[in-house]
Figure 1: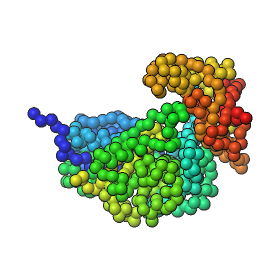
Figure 2: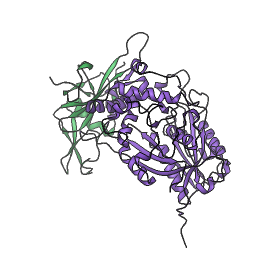
Figure 3: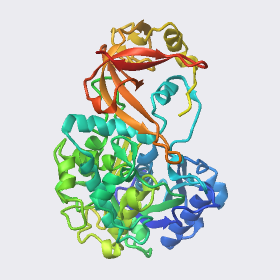
Figure 4: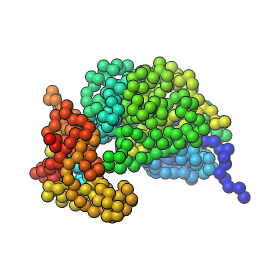
Length: 392
Length: 132
């Protein structure tokens, strides 16, 4: 008897849910997660009773996990797992949902991320630099001054600068370009244009990273629903085909031969995902790149091959990334300017662009969309290739 | 910035026994001889789990660094810490505070030597200073 793996079950994203976002208080991460799932399911024209798969990714506040099944009273789930590779999780979740659908393991898999790190009255930087006891080898790092994610990322940025001559102004070009894109995004938290001078005047967080090199912090949730193209043909939204996916986790050694700061997992996950999709980098018309820091974008551009290794700074400074430039990139403003929902930020904007729902920021050519995810301190990477069109 | 007290755990106990004696300990693989960072538990070269402790020379160079600006408080400039990624001469990397060097003097490859911060409470902690 033939098995149930059906090659013709092409996976698509058929639902997208984005909750109220930003400085929204009085709701837990689980509250946001449940709301995002409801929104995604409604967007897909389905009911919660149609959901037979659920993948969850928790942020700093935790509280988003297997318990979401009971929270939403979902029955007989055929897929249910907590996924965690930090910023790479969204890409990973979508790939697992896609494979579950391809295998006939489930028909409607929701992938959700939500977080509520912001507390009323506390600055946003408090969320990602919370004090914790300095114990053991991590204590050694904290004693060194590495008490925040930003400080650890700054070591990566500095290494790149020392190796390739990248400058703070190069990073600023990325911040300025993304803010310009955000002007066209009604969902963005920060839409006022900034100049390079504004970037250079923003206070140091951990040199060489300034305030405007660092992403926002947001309370909220985002979910997507993955199903088969055949099912999606009966559903209200234009389907977003999931053509390729890959991950790369470098496992940098604590030693001189490490490529930490010089090369990220994008160098491997990018080509792998593009190969699965049957396209080349030159076919990519929209790039939604994880941008926890401007530096993350710069490194990703090099590693994907949009420019040569070490040339990310000049490439950014050339204006290529601006709305008037050659690459439709972080079209919603990204995590730097729109909202910080880890990997769901670039993914949600990619879905909007693929559907043709980008409004004044809609990329005119949206046929191949690259979506990246970075987790930890460049430790985890995922790439997705999405398209309004099925592969030929 | 308040002084930071470091507490040992099981994995770091031998390392902090070393710092208490003014010794910076590294790992050395019993099977292939590769030296690795103190927190290593599997040899990065041969995957052996048999790692011994060995004193380092205590010298290295600056592989990367960041000047961390702590929260400014009411008109007073933010205190700063120079956090370094030190490449020990034996090869392994270690995070350590860089003391006694003006940030304008920091550069990749700067020669460094270890010293030990000995707070009143908690463990003695390696820091690095200019080797010159």
